[in-house]
Image (tube, rainbow, N blue to C red):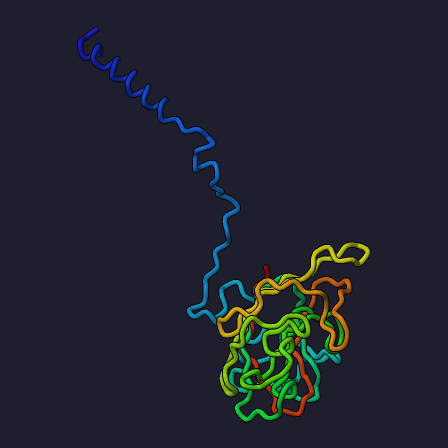
Amino acid sequence: MNKYALLFIPAFFAVEAMAQDKKVDPANDPKTTEVWEPVPKVVSPGKLPQEAPSDAIILFNGRNLDAWHSVKDPSKPASWTIDDGFFTVKKGTGNIETNKKFTDYQLHMEWKIPANISGEGQARGNSGVFLASTGGGDDGYEIQIMDAYKNKTYVNGQTGSVYKQAIPLANANKQPGEWQYYDIVWNAPRFNEDGTVSKPASVTLFLNGVLLQNNFILKGETRYIGAPAYKKHGPASIKLQDHGDPSPAISFRNIWVREL
């Protein structure tokens, strides 16, 4: 054996010993808590927060209401008034709802109380978005929309409330004539075969970027009179309300949804 080999052998065993010393106990190995799959899908966001991301379903594109129909007569299209990039409640025609039904989703929508709004309390720019329409009229789970800018009403009925259930955490309303926006995360209720609730509905809601509902657990569907209650249902349409108060009608634009 040559002298260089003799020099190499001790060095080799020294390196091997060091490698043994560096073996990591699995309990102290950060790799044991790394998760690599499933890989989240790639979604391209809009250039602005209000713009629809790449996987969104557009419910109003600024040109037509093809994604909606009349609640009074589901065979008929929505007949609300379309203008330049927005649409306005057509008083007396009734509520409208989406053709497509949803379960859990993220919803973005923008709305405007007219600058010439009149009335007071609940009779001032009143409308609402029903996160799951469970029948005709106002059946479902309502998030209130109205003019709550320096307009006093019962607090579980002002803008951003889960109507008659949850008081909003803040009043972030803009003055009439300005566009406002909701960002809503809706988790629909789940039911057992016998109709009992296995998991109640919950909602998180932002108005103009301000948190108004923080994972609120709903007690049931909206009731104008009496306590809220659940009834078994599956996927449901999103519904907008023609409230019927005499004040000037409100408008909507830029509505999109992401199924979760």
